[in-house]
Length: 107
Image 1 (cartoon, rainbow, N blue to C red):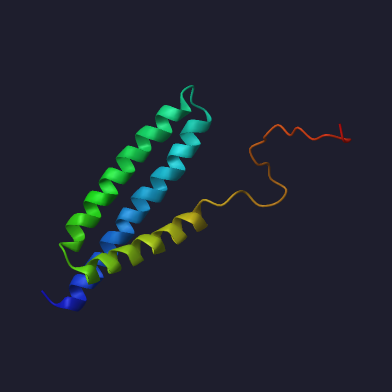
Image 2 (cartoon, rainbow, N blue to C red; image 1 turned 120 degrees about the horizontal axis):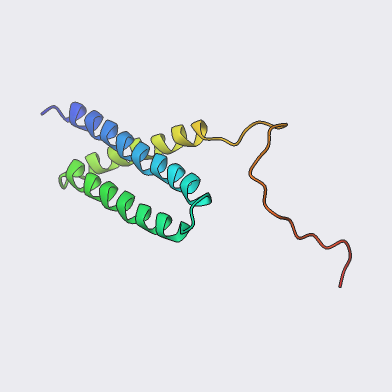
């Protein structure tokens, strides 16, 4: 197979792995915020996402460092795309509220 084509396919595969990993992370965080057992969601998702991603990297690279690097570049690019897609709402819209414990004076 042509080296350039192999590197391009490895980058696309890395992008797909990154979309799966970071999209799954975003989904897990949203799900764990309303779950009765958030630790179970986070830990189970971590195991699944890491297992799929590491297996994907292993098979895509096939022992070639250049394909591994190309896959990693695609993975990082997918991170940037997912990060851009799942931003917080703009100013004026509500964000998830966290109770704030501010002290009005020193103890």
